[in-house]
Structures are given as structure tokens and as C-alpha cells.
Length: 407
Image (cartoon, rainbow, N blue to C red; front, side, top):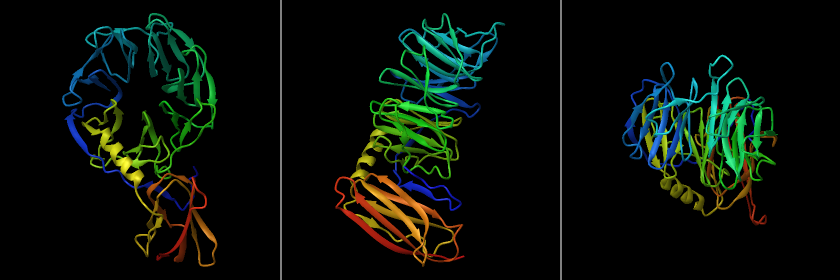
């Protein structure tokens, strides 16, 4: 996908999904929150004072301390296997054998006995991997009893796809086919990748300005951020649940894809976006959490809304921009009854192209493009939509409408 970045500041966005969010509980607002884990009926949210846990799908939350070697610790990340619960803290990795009632420090430690400042945690069976903030990682194959150090990349987050471990890092995307013993840099477009996730079909990696997807186990990557307003905002995180993909942007909103990342829609309606939320899912509900509160949205509502939006509309259409005349912003809306290749361009009275807003493949649905004409002179312009069916190129649509910019 191509989104043209220029001084004209084009902001692209799909039509909104009106999801039903319900506020579940207050967390008090005394400390930052970070790191989540869901297993069985337990939901965990890490915080500065330890972690919150809920056993009733987020209705009630209890604060638990993580008692460290010298004081209570905050939980930055969590992992679990059949034997232990693991927590990433400012004092290294801690482990609990009784569901978090008691914790013990398992390192890794430096030569002076001081633990390293850890950035990320991965747990699978008896393998534990802890990423170091300064670069490199530690790996344990025996639940943290012993550790091996690896120099190199700085891993932020992990994902498993077809038994291969992938990690988003400061210098690109890395992978390990042997449970973290060896690592290889597989995608390096000179960007930081703070977040990565995977489902059965694909791997998704966010790089602040772009969202990338690989459908061949990391061999090739392509942009997959259609509908995200990334011209104006940055991608903070991405997470997957089957074919549903969620991204959090710096506009404090979450965006949802029901078609494996082909298009995204806003799924934040009903949330108090004055709070800075992060998100996680337990497979049935989407949770939004902040220092203040926890909210939930039924994933079925999103899926049903996505299916409805996907089935609509019945015909190609290009609406009149609104407002018109405009200064300097206006919104253009169009509809695609089937997956199409779309060109949307703006021309002046001489027929010269002055702006290219879309030049990409889009799924069926209703879309809006918010256009910023700050770099244009007052006058009459024409925007032209061309849409050609992917399945049947003989089916195409072209329409031109007039837009007036008045300073």
C-alpha cells in the first residue's frame, strides 16, 4: 500500500466501526500499567506496584505485590508454562510456582550479582528468553535455573509462527528456528519494530510509521496498514486474534481489521479517549486498560460489524466532498461493492494532477479520505475516482466531482 506523505498532509481513514464498550472496573490511577497475560479464567495487568488480577472476566481486580529481594517490584511483562508463572521486573525475572502468591528471583545476574535491566520476556515450555534493554538477550532452557547470554539485537516483543520465534527489535525483525539458540536478521528496512504478533496465516510487525505483514514465514514483507491514519499518528502496538488484527495508535485509539490486515476501522467508539489506553484480548473480549480503568468489548460485536461493513455497499459510488467549499480540510467518501484497485486524485482547472490520495488495492466497503488543502491556492479543483474490480477487470467505475477551496 502507498500513502503519499507531503506537506499537503493527507489523512486516510475507513468508515467507523461503532463498537459497544462497557466499563468494567476502576484501577485507582496511582501507577502506570504495562504487560498483560490471560490464561484459563485469570486476567493479569502489570503495574508499578506489582500486578492486578481478575478471575471474573475483568469485573473485579485485586492488586498483588511482587516481593523482591529488597522491596516490592512492578510487573512489566508476564509469561506462563505448565509449572510456573514468570514476571519481568526492574530486578530481572521472577518466578512463582503457586500462581503468584510467592515469588523468587531467578536472575539473570551480572558478575556483581546485580540483575540486568530487562526489556522483554518470552516463555514457551521450559524455555525462557529475557531481552536486555542495552542490547542482547539471555536464554534459559530449564525454567530460569541457568542462563546463557547472547549479544546482538535488542528484542522488544516476541511472536511464534509455525514453530519459529520472531522478535521485533531496534534494528528490524529477527527470527530463531531453534527455540532461541540462534538468531537471524530477516527484515531490516532501517526501522525500529517495537511490536510484533502472528496468527495462522501471517506475521505482523509495526514500525511506528508503517505496519508490515509477511505471509511466507518472514521471507518477504509488504505494507498492511490501509485505513490507518498513520500520516498523522504513529503505531504504538499490534496484536492478533485469528484473522482479527488490532493496532493501537498515538491518537489513543484502537483500530480493528476483520480481513487479516487488508483494511482497518476505528474500534474505539464509546471509550473515554481522554485516558491513554492499551489493549489485550482473551479470545472472547477486547480489553482496554489504563491507570484509571478497565473496559471491555465483545469481539463478536466487532466481527458482526466487520461482516456487515464488508457486505455493504451494493454499487460503486463517489460522494460530494463535505464541506464544500472548504478551508482547508474536506472529507471525500466513496463505496466499493467488491475488492478493487483504487485511484483517487485531485486536479486543477488546467487538468494538472496536484495530489494523489489513493493508488492501491482496497477491499469492498465504504471509505473516507480526509484531505488537507493547506498547500493549495484558492480555486476550483476536481477529484477523480477510478476503481477497477480485482476479480473482473472489465468491471470498472470512474467519476469526477468538483471541490472549491476558499481562503
